[in-house]
Length: 124
Image (cartoon, rainbow, N blue to C red; front, side):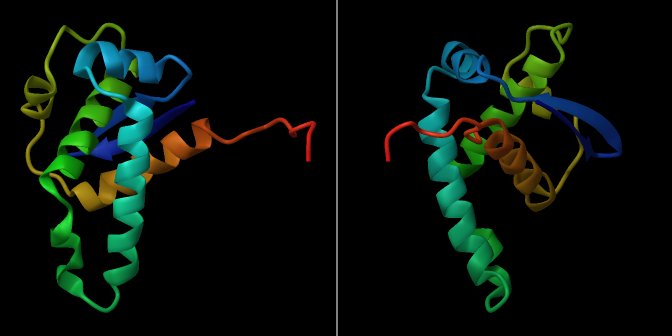
């Protein structure tokens, strides 16, 4: 599944497929499924608080930000195989400032849409 997200005035294509966790493991050496589950859980907690506490958005941990940056890099690289070999840092250097809070929900949505179960379990 592909999604185009505007970042810093540019359209950036992201892809999430069954291959994405493997790419993440090879490039980042971590488990994408665990990382995205943790990031999603923490983001939901913060998003629920933001209406009552405008500073809640500042409470995303460094680890969560790192997961976001790494996952965005891997999904962008997966969508653009011609992208030169880069690290997440080099890829991020290609952008000026952007709001994590505008990009993160869209990236999580792409990840969750890719993981929706389409078959019905036979046992109940």
